[in-house]
Length: 210
Image 1: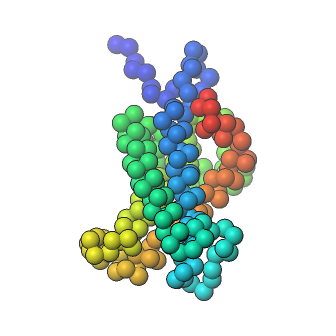
Image 2: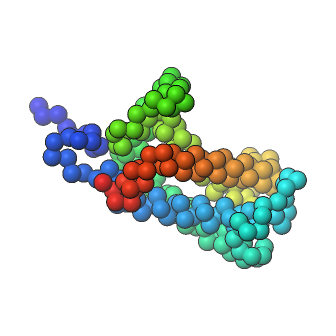
Image 3: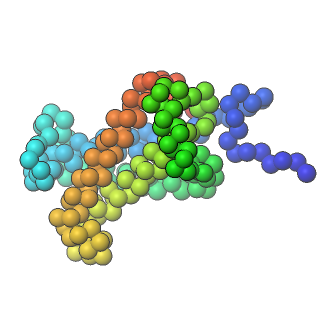
């Protein structure tokens, strides 16, 4: 019996012309990046209007100009992030990419790959293969975005989403959850951009697909 073809063959396989990143993935990736940029910068302006902590974001890095404008940008980014995020997740599940790219995942594998990365010995020879640290990071950012959207719903329609509000410790609790999820997402973006700078061909692959 013939062995079924793996949906994500190894790089360099004979006759392999399959794109590293299919078109739907590249489009949703860049739309997510745009939505995150809009939501973060407008969210910082909204935060400045009623800060949770003893600091403010510099006005030059915020979007909206004033609270009302920032809220409009934030809602626009929210719908883009939620809709595009659901499309991204649905396509990953339907195509089998979620299973083959992000699993299996083990604590031992994460620890081993993290140690190799810290020693500068983690290989990036095959861009089709995600190491354990990448798998954990990408799954984490999916969850962080989901938490951002859910906590954002509480802040937007607190009465309508009463169950979510209670689970997050009330309206003020939801504000802290929203801020922490944003901070974790921002940390991921910084690390992600640093990794792209260290391995620039990954950026070309996300633009061209090959």
